[in-house]
Structure formats: structure tokens, C-alpha cells
Length: 634
Image (cartoon, rainbow, N blue to C red; front, side):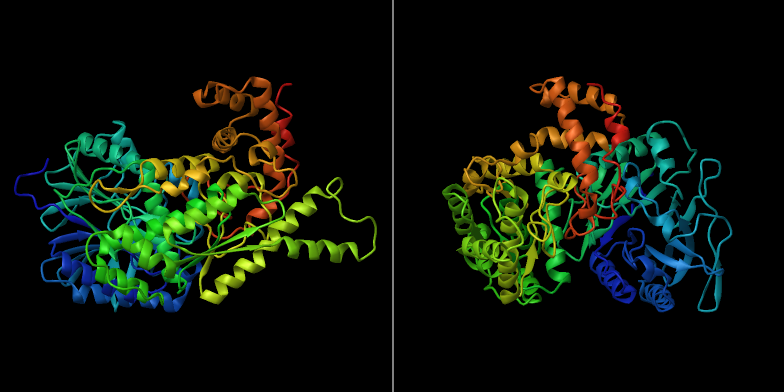
């Protein structure tokens, strides 16, 4: 129960810089001073970042973390409660994920956390590689003073901590909160209790809505204020939303937006943001990843091989969206400063016609695109690429790779080691040389302009290997690698018909130039005849993506077929065709695993991303999934 005089805490998601605890501590103090809140809680591991990995074990890094904690204690405002997550070696030398509670100028509590991700994100979790298991009576020595961690709060023993006029419970295991939400556990809590959930969760499509429902259920069943705060920023393949939720009596008392381009994101009671549509949220999170990669790689913008197809079109549009989101959130002066720090000079925006300003002044400096036609490229993709580049305002070029490809073929034929190359016998060879011939040119453009090269591979192509190594997979960053092709096409249609959000209000910017992209069937344009389509080579993408999502759940072959038959979106496919496509998927999936480790870094967006070392660990070489395929009836 919460009294009317209860002063609820605020939540602050900090955009941590991995490997610089002192910078993070100073940034946190600056944010706390700017907010002016009497009680402020950050996410777990805020002082180090979520993916410091082996750096956590480094003695100098541990010393910097300890120094940063001391800096927070000494710099904290008198009377303010500050909660912050950090990695810390205990007195035995074991690495712990710790939550420090600071009140005024003193360290009041150290709480050991289980850094495991919340369900259903647990499949992404690698915390056991770094952090010691939870146990009681863990001691830490800081500046000669010994601190013993507070007893763990479990189902059998709650341990409310008295701080800032509240009773704070930090459950060491996040699944206990799931049990409260489900009604399987009803803890007896004192008045003015706050249940703090400072997680390490990365963004995943669809999970924001799950978090809101869980927050309402926990607050209703417990009678306490539930506080959830996620990290902010991008680290490797994971993009963090900074989502903050405060829930009371089964309702949302405060919520932040999903994703931010600012140094920190604040959540207060009474400050509510309506949930965004799924595609708006996905576009915002990929755009946040683009901005973070731009900043962290010190690149002067992006380079992109714009083919006129769905994948490269979405990548280009999301660069535009990145600029639009950044400007809308931080304002014109901070926007110019942010781009200037990357070596990009643009004039100050005057007025509120943000989309027009970005198209005219920003995109020519931010994105350079290149259409690389081959002998088999048609006017449809040429026109689609040129019109989209002009609509978005990108600096755009066109050239043909036909002569380069011809020279390669001629050089091989001149070797005289057998028959000359022909489409009848060398289909794959002649397709792949075209895809690879595009690589040196776009890298040259990227180097010339100091840009970060974007790869355009999507999740559907990645899981079956429908891509050319050192061709379309090449680049420094792959923004849509965590999004299936059927979803890519739906997002493009959404952006054409509904548009990009242009700020805090309902106004939208419709990307009408996507019409030529959306009207065509996906094609690689690598074979003569003009009739090649991706889905003809593979299977319909909506079916491929359905198989992809179901396969990772661990279903057996016949159960998987039953699930496909029950999917309304697949009602037009008969059972023999479903079985045929499942066999093809299994063969291609197992044979393409060797490619995964060489993909450009992408983002975890859909649940079953294909990033190396991420969601779906799989043998590099296996027996074509014969065990699963053999269970399929004819």
C-alpha cells in the first residue's frame, strides 16, 4: 500500500559508455543534478555498460569502477538517494553484479544481483560466463572499509531496505516477479514498498507491450509500486531502449518512450507516453542503433549500395529517420552539435519543417548511395533507386559493373584450364561474381567520403544463406540483419502509406518514393532473362519467416507442420508444399551456418536473430538436419 505522502522514486536510463566507468559516473551525477529528483534509480551495470565482457576482469577496470563509485558517493547531493548498478570484484576475487544504494554522502547498501536477463529474453543471456553465482554474505572492501552485501530477497525471505522513506525490495532473481505477476506468489509487504527491477534487457520486437502488462500485474498483485528500468544505447548486436515503467494498483503511473538519442532518459510518476505502433518502435530502435554506430565509429556518415530493392531502400529510409528522430528529440542546436562531433557540418534548422530541412541540408552530408547496375539490371530497379535517393536527399551516383564482370570472366576464360564459363554449367559462379564485383566500388566510395558502409542483408536471407559472402553481406554495420524479409516489406509499405513520425505529435512524413520499391517482387537481378525472383529461388518469404520463428522453439517436424497448417497467414499453401519447403529450409539452414560468423554486425530486433554468438547457437557443420528432416512424413 502506498500512502498519499509517499514520494515515489524516478528512474534514469543512462547511455553508458562501455569501458569508461569514470565518464559514466560523471554523466550520472550531471543527469541527477539536472533532474533534481530526491530519489533516482538507474539500470544494472550502468557504470560499466552491459557488454564489457572480459574487460570486467581487468584489474585497472575494476579499480576504475571503485573510483567511479567513490566519485558518486562524494558527488551525490545531500539527502538524495541514488541507486546504480556496477560490476565489482568481492574480497575473494569473484566478479559480482552489484546494485549500490547511496543516500547523501554515504554508501548505505550493496545488493548482489543475478544479472540474467528477464524471460523470454533469457535465450540471449551469457552472464554466467562472467559473474559468480548468487550466494550469501559476500563482502567488499572499498577504500579500506568492509561492506557485506544485504541478504537476498527470495520467496522465502523478503528483505525490504529502508532508504529515502520507502521500503525497497530488489528481488535477486527476476523470475520471482513473474510469479507475483501470475499470482503464484503473494508476498506480505509493508506500506510504501517499491519493487525495483533494474534489468539488463536489450530491446526485442514485441517485448515493450509485454513489459507494460507485466508491470501492471506485479503492481496489482503486490500492492506495491513496481519500478522497471532498462539500459540505454547500443552495445555490439544489442540495442537498449532505456524503457522506464512505474506501475501502481494495476495501472501505469509513469512511463518513458522506447528508445532515445539523448544521454539519458528519465521516467517520473505522472509522465506518461502512449505506446507506439510496432513498426514505429522498430524503426526508432534501428535508427538509434544507426546513430550510436555513427557516433562510436567516428564516421562522417553512411555509404550504401542502393539497389532499388526492399532491403537497401529500408536502410536508406532509416538513415533519414535517424536524423528526423535525433532532431525532434534534442532540438536544432544539439542536433548540429551532435553531427559536428562526427565531422558532419550542417546549418542550423530554422522553423519546424524538420523533414524538409533534413532532406535539403542534412542527407547530402549524411548518406551517399550508389546504384551499381549489371548487364541484367532493369529500368525498374534503376528508377526505384534514383527516385528514392532524390526523395530522401541522399548524395547519389550511378555506374555499371558490366565491364568489370566481363573482365573477370575474360580473365578466367584466358586461363585455359578447361571449358569457358557458361550459364548452363556455372550459374552460381556467374551470379556471385556480379554480387562481389559491386563490393570494391562501394567500399571506395565509403572510404573517399569517410563513411560507414551499411550492409543490407536481412534475417530471412541470413538463416538460409541466400546471400553472397564478400558481396551483399559486406559492410561495417548491418541495420536490418535482425528483421525478416516479410517484415521488411511490410515496414516499407507502412512507411509509404502511413509515414515516419516527425516528432512528439501525430504528424507524419510519408515516404511516397517507396512506391516503386514496394510494387516489385524482390529480385537479385543476377541471371539473364529478367525473370529471377528471390521467392522463386527460395520460397514465399511469409512462409520462410513462419518456419524460421517456429523452428527455434524446439518443435519436432510434425508439430511444426501442424503449426504451419494452423497459421491463417499460410492458408493458401497446401500440406505437401509446406513439407517441401520445410525440407528445403532445413537443408539450407544447416549448410549456411559457416557464413554467420562473417556477417557484418547487426541488431537484435526480432526474437530469433541470426547474429553470430547471439540468439541461435548452431553447429557450423552438421548433417543437413537429417534427424529433423527424416521425421517428416511424405
